[in-house]
Amino acid sequence: MTIPEMIYVLDKERDCIQRREAGECDKDCKNCDSHIDTSFLLDGLERIVNLVYNVGKSRTRKEY
Image (cartoon, rainbow, N blue to C red; front, side):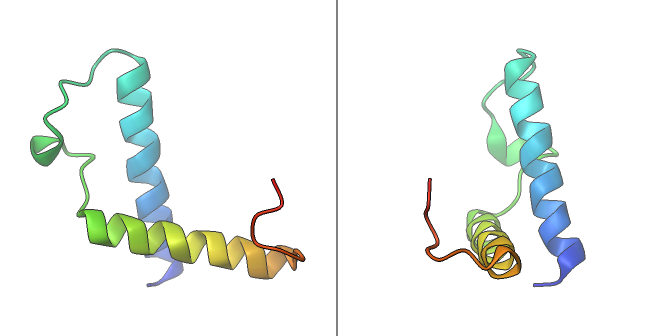
């Protein structure tokens, strides 16, 4: 997955959260223009977390 694809995943998730918070979500995810395939979403999020982890050189992946 490329960096632009990772940014795409984050943008789509941000749009989804903003719509839900604004009360504009009808929960028809499959027909929403913010929807992305679940496997692509999970892969993207995993890669983003790993990228941030590796850049920050944290001792453990989950320090929170």
